[in-house]
Every structure is written in structure tokens, then in C-alpha cells.
Image (cartoon, rainbow, N blue to C red; front, side):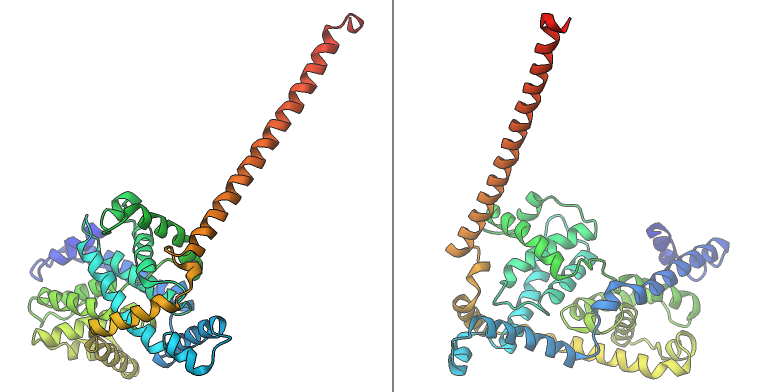
Length: 368
């Protein structure tokens, strides 16, 4: 299917022959099926939210639940001074989303953009119901990327993966593998992500075939890519369907390239009764993408200093509590292995004794 896509995108409008029509029909049918799959997807059913207020409420509850659990014996003033606020958590997460993106940009071999987008989805989902005080973002970040590599079939081994990480790579490998199951559990094993890249290609094909008044639609692509990079750093992907994000990216690109797609949207793409909702969604997505600003380094450093004191030490790989818990788990596994081995030896001994008894009976004179 990818080869068909590339053939279609390479065609000019002068290539108006049977092959062009055939390939466009195939890809258009494929794109419609992909678009129709989203409403039934786990992403739409479990990981799309009504509005920003619902996301804010979830994050506030996550923050409050952690503080209630770990600060039960503190006064309100002590809690405020000791723990991170929900706003501080959000600031830190915005910083680490940028770190995730930059890690993927530097990755060797080069990482496909769908893998990066899927990793960012996982990261956002995880911290809707988990506090950064429970699980440090720098540890969950690399786990999200590693899991996304598997799901998006970007095949790298754990040793290849950690070769891209500075510092103790053996420790990084242990952290990733120890957190992988936790991450999948917290995502409810809903790992398939519908990203806006295919809807963008569908729109590009549609514009080339049904809106021929736009010259060279490919000039939109750099602006589309730039917009999508920004939009993945917002909550848009938790609020709007991939097709809506794709349309917002395309209209943003048209605006930047001094092209006009108004007639395409109003006369060709949507019936008039759907326009109001679509236009409002596009406006909000574009507005959110404009507001992506990296947090101040000084602010982030202050939050991380506070986090070092209030994080859950049971989930801190550098803490004695964590190391002791890991050792206990290993000891328990060793004990279970020893018990299994002892049972095998015991069963073998019983079998040998039984076999020996039968042989003795057969070899005795009375048995003849």
C-alpha cells in the first residue's frame, strides 16, 4: 500500500490516464477504511476526552491522590511546601515531552515520525492517572519510546536502544525493562495509535484530484510537518480525531504558503451542516499549537529539586528501598526456581526407585 501511495503522490495532474485513476481509487478506498476504523478504536473509546477541563480535572485528581496517600500526617501548609502542585507537574511534563522529542531526533538509526508520535501519545496517557512524584518522567520517557519502537515495528534491540542513552547503559536497560509491563498496564494494553499522518496523505491526494485550482500542493508539506511537530506537544491528540488534526495542519500550511483552500473545504470536502463543528475544531487545534513554549530552565530546575525530596522512593532506582525490593523479588524468583528444581529431583528419584523395583521383580527367580 505504501508503494501505491508514493506512486499517487508522484503523479502530476497531467498524468490523467487509467493507471492514475485506478491507483487513486485503491488508495482512496484504503484511506476511507482507515478513517472509518478510528471510531471503533480503543483510542477513540477510551483515550479521547471531551475538553481541556476534563483533562485538567484528571490531572488534579492524580496529584491530589498522591498527596493524600503520602502526606496523610502533614498539615495543609506542610503539604504545599513539600509536594509538587498539579501546575508544577504539568510544567515538568511539558519539559520532558520536549526531551522525548529531542531524544528521538538524535536517535540512531533515524526514527520514523510515527514512532515518535506514538511515544508521545503513551507519555501523555500515562501521566493522566500517574503522578510524576510516583514515576519520574525521565524513566517513563525512554520506556514509552522503547515500547513505541516495538508497536510501530521500528526494530531495534534493547542494546541498540540504550546505545543512544548517555550514562550507565546497563542501568538504563534495567529501568526500561522493569517499567515496560507497568507502562502497558497503565495504558490498559491499548497500544494501537491512530496518528494523523495517513489522513494528511489522504487529503493531499484529494486536493490533487478534486481541487485542481491549487498549484503544486506539495508546497504545503513542509508547513504541515512543522505544524504536526508542534501539535504533538499539545493536548490536541487527546481531544480531536486524527482526521481533524490532519485538516488543521493542512489549512495551517495553506495559510503559511499563501494558498486558499476555503472553497475546497466548504464546497468539496464537507456538507454545510458539518462545517460549523469542523471549523471550530480546526480553530482550537491551531490555537493550541500556537501556545507551545518550552518552560524556563530555572523553573524546571527548581521543580526537579523539589521532586527529589518528595518522590516515591519505592519507585526510585537509586534508592535503597527500591534496590531492596528488587533484590527481594530476585530472591523470591530464585527460591521458586530452587523449589521447582527440588521437585523435579524428587520426582525423578521416585521414578527411578519405582523403575528399579520393577526391574528387581523381573530379575528375581520367583518372577520366572
